[in-house]
Length: 349
Image 1 (cartoon, rainbow, N blue to C red):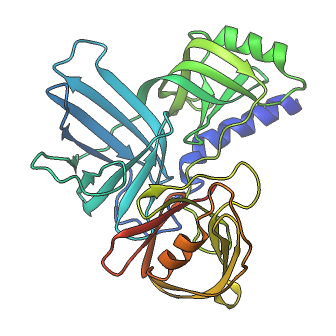
Image 2: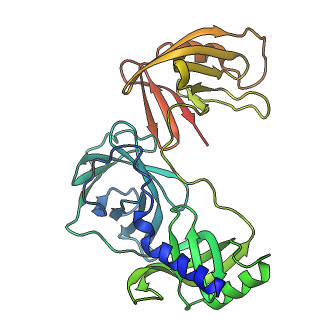
Image 3: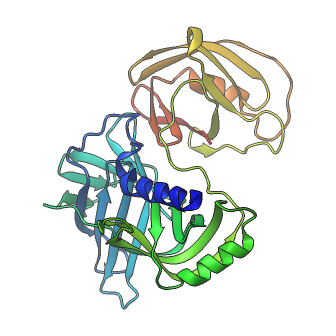
């Protein structure tokens, strides 16, 4: 009886999940009336154009479809993942199945523009804009590999996809029987979630109760299942009270040490304190913050003599004195000078 009640509760969570958690609430979203689909043909170096549609949902997830015009099949690709807004600049940060980040600038409520891999404007006469369609697309994607936490309990399977965090009831079709059998053989206890990989079709299908159409998973082909966890999902990081690891300084990548202190910064809420390291010496100071404008004031630094790889103490100290503004794009922080030029880039896990 408990197992059936537990499974019913899971199904209810699936039905209501799209409105349960809004990943974009950390930053105002200049896009009313979500979900919204943006569509158009993007430039392509090896085809006639990439026919693209991206659907942004209000819970911070997205799905997309692309067709490479002029190429022989298979010439289509689908994606599913999460999106957040940058703290400034109205930039949509997207992370899909291949974990690479994509960036689009919101030019208006009805138009977004594709940016380069550094979240900068693409200087070209070609068209990188996608426009809002009259109605939003419904979910209908075939994806491989599709990874997620799978649970089978009381004759019901539930698949929580890793990148988006969305949960889908599993349809009793396709390779479902093999997925169930492999799960039951490998679980240690009832209700234990295992990390599964499938070739899946995500689509609307009648729910177990009431026949309402809900996003569901059809496992077209079972691949693998084992103990494991999903990686950290894309989220909008906070500026303060966490350590930001330095990954780029004045246009050059920073070599992180295999052991010891990593170069980076922390901006503390208490007393506007600043602490950090250049990879060797400890840095201490204060900061002043006014919206997107920031000034970093270093007042002390230890004076250890360090020869370890990745030590950028001197360059980091002189660079921080030039910082005048900041931005956060997902889990990446950027610091700029008074002309808006990028000085340093940091990441947070």
